Amino acid sequence: MLFPLEAGQSGTRADVRSANAAATFDEVDGLRRLAARIARSTRRLVILVVGLAIVVLGLVLVPAPGPGWAVVFGGLALLSTEFAWAARLLNWTKRKVGRANAWIAFKLKPITVPLLRWLPWRRNRPDPAALLTVHDDREFTQDADRKAG
Image (cartoon, rainbow, N blue to C red):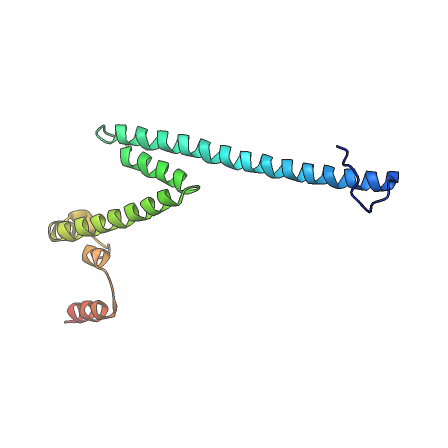
């Protein structure tokens, strides 16, 4: 692309070539930035479509026997690689699932611990109550006092 000479510039071929080279470099740099932006947008769009498809498939599989929720969480994990809202939703879900697991373990502990303690296959195995207990310093001392006494 040829640029007209501005006031005060000489009309030598070297000046015209350097102006054209600078313009060509700017055009190539602009095209590279445009190509990178298109690639980034395309990647985000593909991740959005595939991630949403996986989440919808997982939600369809939830009532059926199988890994429905695992598929939903996998789709959220894929979406969270590109989208902040999906990362926040995935972290919220992880917290809720962790709390639900702790609640279930707390509710089942009175049933499972006595059962596991007296099963015949349990010989020479650690105490199941110790495995299900959340330990902090106070509980360690209480457990040690109970076992010693």
